[in-house]
Length: 310
Length: 281
Image 1 (cartoon, rainbow over the protein chains, first blue to last red):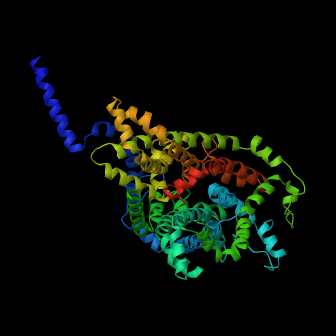
Image 2 (cartoon, rainbow over the protein chains, first blue to last red; image 1 turned 135 degrees about the vertical axis):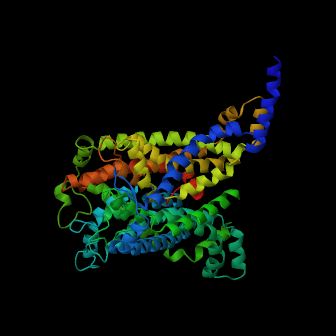
């Protein structure tokens, strides 16, 4: 009896000390948070660290791994295909994001007006983004088809081209044909975000600008653009991360061909690691832009966190 | 109000409808072409001059998709995987979001940060180590393997989105329930969850469509129809037939239906979720 009576305050004491260190609700909280921490550590953080390590190994699928230091990176730097992918990834990302921003802004401005059937228009213009990318890419592969494709036929009939264009097998054209699909698919996302940004600009600002005698262009430059600044930054930042890492368009439209002229890092990483069975080298390819990507992730994360705190 | 709308309208008016017209054709023609291709007989499809408007309609491509291909299996796999991922990530996300927003414990800011940064880590960085992991635990070519992999993108954003919403539920409501003798968990289920239905619907919708549309993990971790989903299934169909475009477009059309339907149903909420930075684009 006496012992029990003694034990009670002791555990209470321990409990309150734990509470002081771990927080008032630590017991319940740790149970609730456990599954998500398991996912975060086991399926994201651990694999992420493993990917960085793998890049220093020669690791064939199912075989023994061998530490080789920077050998993978040396191999890549002497590889013409890696340099080609380097250039393509830059072009693909810069022009993809650039065009999506420009076209998305134009359509957001148009839909921001009072228009008949605006809700329906907005829903229709959004369809490409809601369809799986695989489907988008296959539809375009069929449209781009050399012989039976509808694009060649229509352009030829309109006398815009004199002979059929090899959209996905001409080395000079293939990457641009793919970027066009990337822009076609991704613009709705930009448009929606810009539209939400436009709607948050108070009407009074436009009224004030008009009273001051501002032209349409001036009110666009001095009211609309500054009002959109934060949305523009968030959307282009996040989209740069996602666009540069999306492999479906290239994989389906050209598989990186012909002769790697449309290869980008994501497809090269896949072909090297899975069909090529070299996981270490593949990881090195996937990490090619890592310093740039990591800084984008850190900046993007901070922006999102700040947005949540407001 | 009326005046300001006029101000916004004035300068853009000239080219509103021409630009919208071009934009609509550019946006919608590919889908028109998909559907008409799916309905055209092969004889009408592979000719020097494609028919812009189909003259004969056939359901043979759809028939082939349903009865003479692996697509029924692909659809079953996609449905099971997407549903399982949606339910699992909702459960995990609801508990985590509630703890982070309402409970006091050490390390919660770290976890909140971890969630947002891991949400931004692209699958291209993770698919190789995840392949190793799934290979080692013997889950290659299984739906379970895919479900595990998909949690890497659904759990962070589900938790993130729900955190934002739970914050808007007044604490006073919950405190009243706690005073009345509710435990934390009953307060979560009886008060927070019913009030958060819109957010739960959006996150479920996003989890489902993101899982349904996923490609890279499915391509890497599955290689036969037993576990392949619709997206990789579509790519594996290409090799089987020389004149495959009718079947391809019929299958594409069917694959696109669930996400497009869900989007149209939840459009109102989707826009809100989008602008909260919830979805990749």
